[in-house]
Image (cartoon, rainbow, N blue to C red):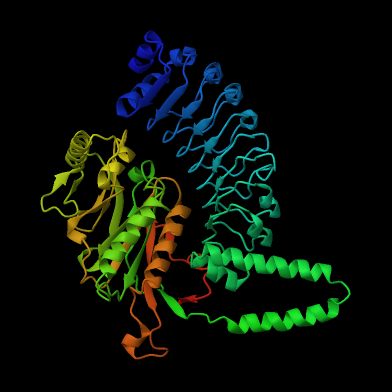
Length: 532
């Protein structure tokens, strides 16, 4: 491998291996074994390749301080990683890792650890990582945070990012972390959080959205993103708990008083009655069906769709713009910059069903890109966008690019591109890059098809779609009940129709939204399932 040879000859301390050429070499020959002899390396980055495994010889690189392995196809890490005693920054995000080696607990100099977007269901103890500042395990399948994460000896730990897992419990020991300023536990399975959380002295950013809290009032505050109000609510609960425990003599009176007080609190809460009406897939099989081909299963195997009817994208002067901005925001956050999932919206009146989710070779995939009039191949489109990105880099004299150009790396090393095709054989979507201009939405659009695809998880697709629908309701994009002269006036309503996804033989893979989807924790929103 040319990069490794040059690094050896010039005794470099930094080595970057990335992209299609490197990936092809690795696929044909494996990772160059000479790399493991570059013991002078401080910085090693291997990204966006088909790399599936690392040799135990990785432990030879004892001078590494930065190890970047994101966006590969790693399924495991060698236990010899513990020999990298100087490692400070480790990023192994966006891989296929199901289990982390126990030896990672011995990296006592580690300051930043990013294992997001993998397939982890558990994590080794981290109590010995005394230099840790940032711990990111988002978009995995963890059922609990790792042992030792709230060790008071982790005095530098400032960020815990654990959103989009299956975590059911948050320990009261969270207060043991003196410098914790950001905690993201969004989209987990929490039913309550400890009131002691309010005593975290430096906690400024708290994200608990997407959990089903037993305390409806607390859940409402969480969904409103009112961090200050959430902390005050927890603080008041903590004071009540401590007062109750300390006042043993007047326990009976305290109980009676608390009950009265609780009733008053409940009476003071005014719950909204905005609704999401879910329409069942039509009994006459006249609904929209998306079939998945075998070709796309190895490229981008997950997709969910639904139809939203009776939209009003002109309700305010900014409604349409806000809807587009919402999708962009979700792409940057919940979709992890489109690496976890990609959203596409289509004007339903221009969609010819049934649809097919397929994968095609770049020269054969033909699409009219969004805001364009001419049909081009996927190969030409990507090549042109890469040239544009390079031109922008030169003109602005910076490495980073924005807009659609920043997603091009997601297609590197792909021999086939995913696409959604209508019944006429027209490509209407090319995720994660663009939609077709033929189904472009406008301010006049009244019904849309929402499409969410992912290469990592069906659950991610559903969570993204859930969040998009809830936000659309909150923005008032659905028809108000007042428009139909039905009380109570001003009530927001969003009408959603199910879409089925099948295999080519017609066997059902997923229908969205199902009974288990749209489990909204916001007490101000009701989901009416009109098929129950």
